[in-house]
Image: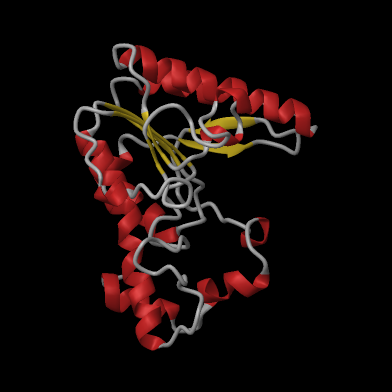
Length: 232
């Protein structure tokens, strides 16, 4: 995750204590408690105002009776799928921002507002390059949140979006804000990686079936990526 340096110690102490048993009900309870602690921390540091959320994720763990219309949290949420609000067009000046496992999808595997049919339909060489160039949208949004927001907490899985990992790892001022958590064992215990490494792998089978993961392994992808960003 990335967080504002002035609050990173407080946020890390909450996230690093995450311990989720394997049973579904207890895991959901643990996640809900974690989310409420994150909200309470950001709420207190923002003078009592609720944070802006990029990606409607908290609603998945929040009691239904506390959501608006059953699926949106009662504060500003940017989510193209749920309310049509586009975070890439928003300003976060003086805002407190929370984003959980969302920024890695922006420009990478979300459909977005400009390509409602998605990137996985009828892709040719030009389409492949357009898709690769769009990968900058997530890192650009993350950098803007980090520059504009008063307080923020942004999380994403290392290894899922290699371009996002590369940008954060090779941008010194973003790297200084980053904390990397790694799972210790099958009991789902976690710890902070003291080296904050970004070379962890991600098993796409945890997220997609073979029909939708194919373009990540396109044989021309390294060449197209080098053409777009000048590096492999």
